[in-house]
Amino acid sequence: MVKRPGQLRFLDAQLRWGQRASNALWRARHDGSDFSIVSNNCWGGVVYQSLRRPYLSPFAGLFLMAPCYLRLLEDLRGHLAHAPRLLGESRYEAIRLTRGRCSPVYPIGLLGDDVEIHFLHYATWERALDAWTRRTARIRWDRLFVKFGDQNESSAEFVRRFASLPYERKLCLTNRTDVEGGHLVCLGGAGPTTRLQEDLEYRRHVDVTDWLCGGQTRGGDFLRRWSRRADRFVAEAAVRRCSAQVAAGQPPETNLDAQIAQLRAAGGGVTCWT
Image (tube, rainbow, N blue to C red; front, side):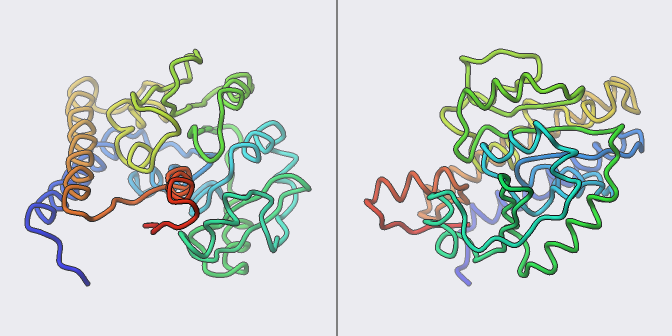
């Protein structure tokens, strides 16, 4: 294992303790209600972990490409009525280029005839299918929260399609300024949302506990202020750590969009970090 420079170790510890404080405030403010998050990547799973709540959704440890995700959301009950089938190869060139090279050779499932599920954090199909089946049965359809990250071959068209979906509680993380809607959260970057933005930096812009509790969090304005301060600290600490990693020649974690951009820039040859 390569020893990290002293500055990076300090920034790692700063971020780690900041997240612990931020998550503790999330838990203090949360009203204890159950919720099911549908997400196109691991974002929802991290929210469950941060709040120490049970997974009442199968959308954890996996991701979907934007075209598949929108097809899924346009008929969510219909697609989830049947178990996914094992799929040997993806229809997406980006997946074929990076799977096994920039990521493990993870199992891929197919819902119906048109929705691929990429079980990125599962070693075997059996474990992925078991988790999917158990968690799908737990979905709280009356407490459904739908999140879309504007990445994985997304476009303005997909963001607009998401905006038109009839979900009461929805959230779109994006860098776009050419699409409007109360559900949109502009993160202030450029291009597809990045790994850094979706992992941690979004906390600067979104009060997750407030979203899940419909504005009725515990602790009132006092805990809200401290929670938002902690969230901003985490976001800023994550940016500082990422900048220090790059300066030290230690590439940060990247998502699929960044990996494909690197491949294209290198003419097919690239080192990927996950």
